[in-house]
Amino acid sequence: MDLGKKIKQLRVNKGITQEKLADYLKVSFQAVSKWEQGQTSPDISLLPKISTFFGISIDDLFTLSDDAHLERIENMLETQKDLNMQDELYAKNYLISLLDHSDKKGKAYTLLADLYNHRAESYHNQAIEYAKKALEINPELKENHGALGSASNVASLDWNFENHHKLIDYYIAFCDKHPELRISYMCLIELLIADGRLIEAKKYLDLMKQVDNTFRITWFEGMIEKKAGNHKKAFEIFDKMVASDPTNWLVWSTRADEHTRVCNYDKAIEDNKKALELQPKPRYIDAHECMAHIYKIKGDYENAIKMYEGAITLLKEEWSITFGESVDRLKREIKQLEELMM
Image 1 (tube, rainbow, N blue to C red):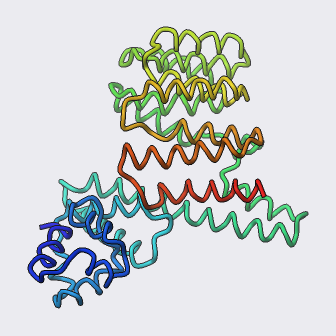
Image 2: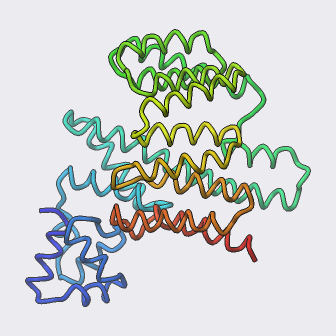
């Protein structure tokens, strides 16, 4: 029995309403409802209070299956901006404990990678704030600017620092091992184009054509031309990509990105709106965020806020997401824009 069902059973047996349990735990009754419906799980810090309320031990309460544990950890990583040490330790230790179980090992490794990326992002965000504080005190200090750039993953003009040769070597071997996988070639070609290794990019694009016939082939052809400095030809190819598959929202979204990368902001907004129009529900919020970034760059904070508000509405209406980091992150962006408008 999963945790939500166990809580519901205990609550019903005790004749307690969701509202009364929520009041005791200092959470909303909607949160309790979502637990019982299996949509979310209570924060691990609430388990002692829940067990006390029902007069049972945490072990009696927290009898989850491996699948339930994995789902709970996945939800934690998706909804929480920063994990506290208790949650992080629980997730790490539980996932490591599954590595000897062949049927769960793949998922455990995936979530361990997500966990450490989550931790790295948290540390980078904190490093950004400290670096900004340091720059307020010593604005001329190179180390402070370097710390800010490193935490923010800023591109460097130092080729020796910026190139991706190690990851490229990995994906060359990966493609040799998995020649039937489109994603193998996509990851490799993107890296080769980023490093300007265009002859090799064309070679692997020819190999990718053997396993893929989607718009992505045309997209990569345009990206190679753009990296070579042939912008006019590149956008002729991107236009051809859209014209050949005009009902596919992905081609409009892809061309929108390419317009944004060369500051064709008005055209990027048009393409993002078209992508939103064509995308089946539930839709992603990428187009809203892209347009919000563009409007912010243009100094149009009012429309940027509208885009973030649209993203929040989309999450609520099409994904039933009303809380957690997915929403909180957007609200923080709105708050920053409102402060800029003051």
